[in-house]
Amino acid sequence: DVDLLRVEASLFDEANHFPWQVLRSGTGATLTGTTLAAVGSDFINRGVKAGHVIVLDDGISIRLCEIVEVMSASYLEISILRANGEQPKIAPGDGTGLAFRIATFDPQAWETLVDLTQHFDLRPGQPDSEYGFEEILAPGVLRQASVYGVLARVFAVWGSREGDGEAMWKKSMHYRGFYDKARLRCRLGLDLGDDGFGDMERRGGIIRLRRE
Image 1 (tube, one colour):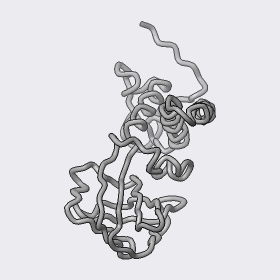
Image 2 (cartoon, one colour; image 1 turned 120 degrees about the horizontal axis):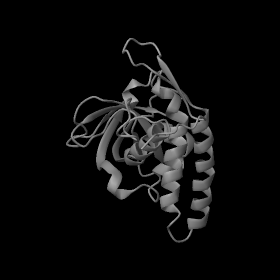
Image 3 (cartoon, helix red, strand yellow; image 1 turned 90 degrees about the vertical axis):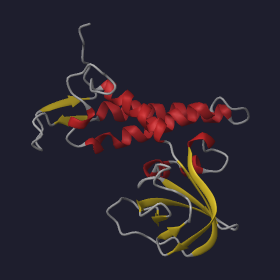
Image 4 (cartoon, helix red, strand yellow; image 1 turned 180 degrees about the vertical axis):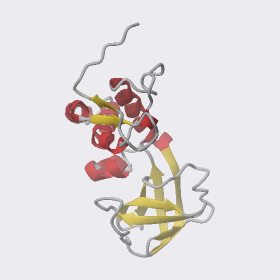
């Protein structure tokens, strides 16, 4: 979700998120430094995790922040959006009585993962493949393609809405084009011996034929 935020912050607007994909929302949260306290929120059992995005509303302004760590059921470590996870956390500014919402696009990310692994003839996209996603030496190479794939899916759903549907369809096609190109550029090293070294390479631009 943080990767999506870097490209399309509008995904997390009140009018745009999918209500059925809200993990937790509430009021009365307190933010001190980078620590957000929301008693009774049950973040762990609700599936909240690092990399998700939290929307904070103090009644005057709205802040979109990344979740860095789920410290406990009621406490999160959060930060203003950083260029990457290696940078120090940035405090969003203290506040009390904050409304918050954590919505995720993890379901769309899973659909994109299935599509990508199918393209590379890997599980779970190809259930009968000899090799799986877990054997990719550096899965991060799929990050850009995955982001574009998720955005294409989300905007395609919004394209069926009345009003701004046509604009959403155009955005979906825009990101679909980026997704297809990024997927073709990917080169995956597979670690078949679990020794940290690549034993096989899969290239996105090479078509593989399977005998049925």
